Amino acid sequence: MKKKLVILTGAGMSAESGISTFRDSGGLWDKYRVEDVATPEAFHRNPELVLEFYNIRRRELVNVKPNEGHLGIVELEKDFDVHIITQNVDNLHERAGSAHVLHLHGELMKVRSTRDESLIYELSADKPDIKMGDKCEKGYQLRPHIVWFGEAVPMISEAAEIAKQADIFVIIGTSMNVYPAAGLLDYVKRNVPVYLIDPKDVRTGRFDVHHIKKGASEGVKELRERLSDLGKG
Image 1 (cartoon, one colour):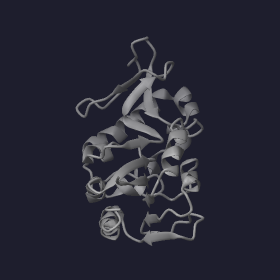
Image 2 (image 1 turned 90 degrees about the vertical axis):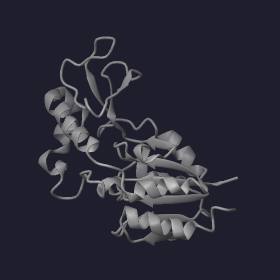
Image 3 (image 1 turned 180 degrees about the vertical axis):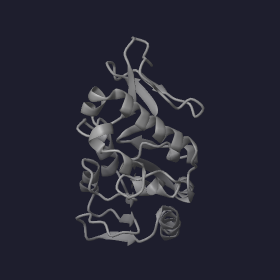
């Protein structure tokens, strides 16, 4: 039986593909305040602005490709039972070919009804925009299928269960500052090896973390080398 490899990814996973990160300067987030585009209050106050912000992000997404880090994770599936928990809303893990991806913060290429959360629709690369007046089948305005700041994270319980089952746990490109995602490490058993891929220092609260100080692509390459003998057991 393959060992269960659980990977938690954040913005640094997709940065090499050209996706704007939240905290780095010069990106898309520099032009907008979070309070104006990524909260329920913002959508109530100025839905046109919020919809256009996510339209811009979708147009950006359809024009980028998975990087070597995404593709390297797919290669790990040959030897491990790989499960990805991502804080990212892009679909680059899926486009790379990963089989098991759980999105904590929603999915950029999906929209849902403002009244019935079960009505979820997938957008296409050639028609990535939604506007005021675009409605669900029940006649309610569509909104991004995104977990905004101040909203509950519905998939966190499932993510915690996956983290509990990890034989190996890997963190890639996340500051470990955003909760509840950062708290997933608390569910990982103490005897489980933990690897962190990030060029920067990241505080995890654990002293047994193997830190690979590289970006996603080079870091995943080194991770595969380090894990090459563990996938057989």
